Image 1: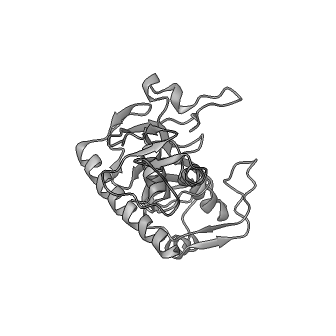
Image 2: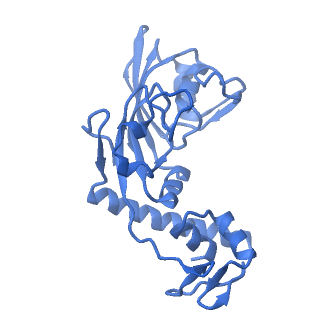
Image 3: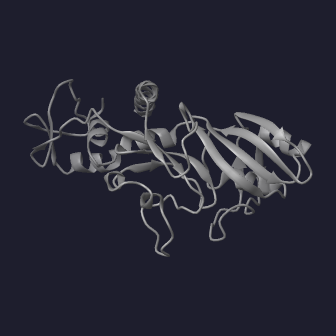
Length: 261
């Protein structure tokens, strides 16, 4: 593992911040001053400002069923309810993986490990949603779900204060039309990104308002029958899948870094 990656994985610092610490001479490997070219041998101790980094092998992940009318945020200057108002105080330091907007509900992963949250957010794991829109599903919408779409004006469905205008939508990983009617339609869709109000903006391009949006899965984690406003810990199988995912993610990241040098 690269030194900056090790520091980022076991401390609050990012890789970029770790590089700055190394460059400023604040990092030692054993008793030797570290450099950006230093190789970290397995089992070696790393120190920042003379304090040894204790490897963090354990982390905790929970699934929370976010309610409508809650913000995925630590706090809100307007006094609106945030997800941490529904969670016990021992989860106040947990980091959320991605967001769901104020009017949406469903599965939200939180963890006490920033590297884990970052890896999950940056991944192309499928995010699956149940959606209700006003009006019918057209052939144009189906083509866009299958082939992707570039829109120069994707403001409809976005937040009124958002500066995003144009948006590129990747082809959906999966879609199923559960009900198609002129009054309203229901779909089950999976996407591999998580852009700002992506699904609301996508259907907004076609003049459709998303009336209901519920995330029911994030990769290998499923909402199942978890009640709205409740949380649960990851199951053994989910932790097992997560460890496999993290191992693969770490390998990919290392290869990316090596290819740049």
